[in-house]
Length: 274
View (cartoon, rainbow, N blue to C red):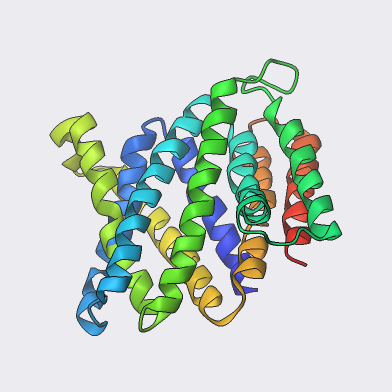
């Protein structure tokens, strides 16, 4: 239930990014506020060891790439198209990489799950930004798939970090304390000092930052006491929440076909880890 809550919170803060015209600034507000929220906790957690620092540094690079690609994807596509593509493809990438490069087995259920994911992706990839009958913007698909590659990489890396650190909570606190720095600096570079002016978007970003922090904290905690695969798979049910938010709240006009496609992607992800 807590991982399902994390999935809903993740879809919710993504909706905040998508619905804002200045997505780079909103991403900076979300990530920056998340960092500020955990700063008071730093004195109560141990300093990371060098082994943990190496994982943290790599994770910060991967999280920054993820944010940049996600912003680009939402610039060219609807949430109902981008979100399931980005979130649902990552577990398939991890599974196929393990099969081709690490010699891991690919059971029949996992194979079927990959086919389901591909079917859902094909359906979503040809969805139009301007409606289900128009032509899809290929940039949305490419950036969404790039986003999924970053997700796959940082999920594995952070799962290792949660297990290597003294506690999973200590790892998450350090990760979030540092995570907002890079994207905020990028936003300051692109938007200038106007980013620092008091504005309503700060409050919206703070809500998104809280949702993002709690959601990922729950996931890292779960991965520290349960196998990585099932936790990562259950988390990807967020694609269904994303499709519902896209249609019911953002009014992107996706209709039942996008919800069904997202559900197919989620089913495929779950089959990967059975």
